[in-house]
Image (cartoon, rainbow, N blue to C red; front, side):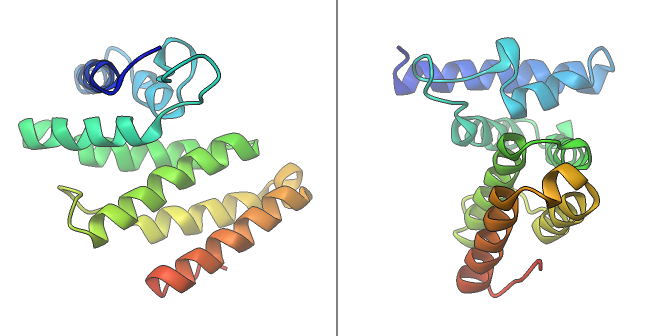
Length: 161
């Protein structure tokens, strides 16, 4: 089991490593693997707890503050957009949306050190769902999309549907 300090340290190392590999061109996929928590890039407090996207997002913020010229804000946006375009299951769909909704909330509360076009990413999720037969025919996905749209409307005055 990892405590809060341990998770923070691991997340910081993961973000620094993934960003460095992305920027030097040695591994473009490491950033998306970190965001999605695949393989050795999974960050969880204990086995089965699930990928801690909040800690990854906080580590991205810390890295951005220390290295504002690293383009981590642009990499984050680009990697989310690329992942959204290739999504094929509800788990990755919700994880990407969790990052976007957390970013939106953090921007509103002035916690995020940078801003992104969150609505375009959420609209991209909608477009991806509508263009993939496996997703559009899944009632769980459609219910989730409707709930996300309602949440956006109620809390931010935006709609994606």
